[in-house]
Image 1 (cartoon, rainbow, N blue to C red):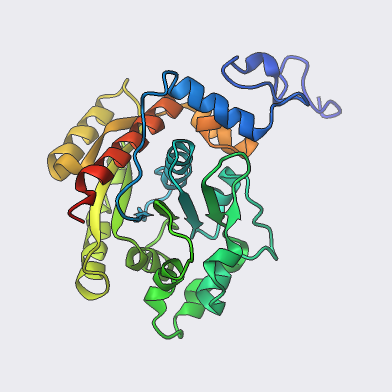
Image 2: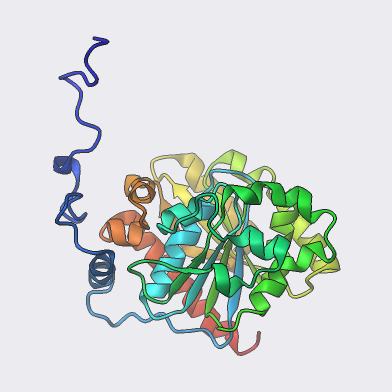
Length: 317
């Protein structure tokens, strides 16, 4: 009936009775985010025996895939939170004009907020725009506002346009263990800036057929950047996302990716999980929103693998 906003037969849009007890109640007695972060560590690492060792040198990872909807931002946010909760100093650079990584970390990014655009176009130091993430110690975020949408055009006429982000990160007075750069779903100048600033590329790949199309184009672009702009760039990590174990296609895509990329593919696979999708609407990562969920434990395992690989290869990097 048009006069009734919600039909009596329909459930309310948000109801606490549909939220598992693993997830804190969304009412006024919510614990502070810091308490949720502490609880996340207790659930994900109850014995405290698992450590994510800090790398021997700062690791700058560009999270890239020109296909949208493969989990770039979700991966960036959750890996960053998992590593920060276990003692690593982490910076997230939101390089997507949509600002979804800023949303996921509950960092203000409305018009007028100092953001990564100011660093790229006006040479504002990164330290002046980085914001601490509430409740997560050791984690900072450089937000993206809608201003960044015009940066692609404005960068065209700027001197050394491809290396603006690299210089901003290098000039930051504090050294981070990890810098994650969340790229837009394109291969434009913003992504090129990220590839020039990074030492490593992390590619999330959705376990569906279309995800494999276009991957060659991304690899070709990475190779071009390596040849002409950043010779140390390496595709170090492939992460399979949105894995649905009920389908043969997901298994076939996984086998194809593992056969092609070998040891670069993490053993941890991120399943399709509703908690992962719900978390950003509360301004949280799934690590704190529902640490007992399959999504959270999978990202925890992926972060642990990345940390261990950094130690195992750090001495030779």
